[in-house]
Length: 121
Image 1 (spheres, rainbow, N blue to C red):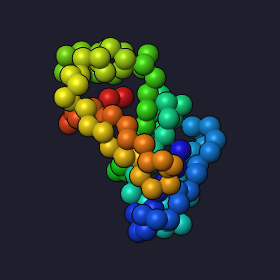
Image 2: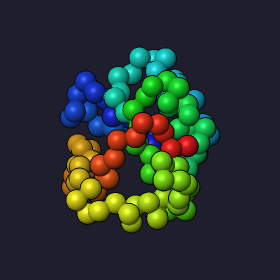
Image 3: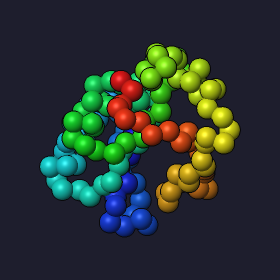
Image 4: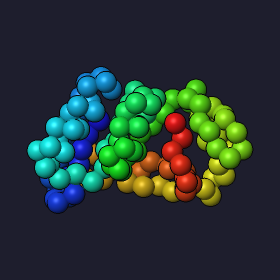
């Protein structure tokens, strides 16, 4: 989990290591300390943590959290495993977006282009 500052793109990310449970407390401390950041990222250990996502949404914080293929997501078509939903997105529905400064080399990850009216909790 890391917070990237919005004020200086060349400034390195501040790593937030640790279990998903205490990370909400660490993010809250960053907010209280007025540390500038635009969004929060995390791997599936964080993305599969519903309370963490709800914490971020309640504070209207932008985030990108990976989820496990077995994670269940709900859409207008019903509830499906994330891996099944990902296979239904056509190749033209993905866009390569660079991970940004601080990653070496700057990898581009394929992200599905999908507006979401509500979070998939």
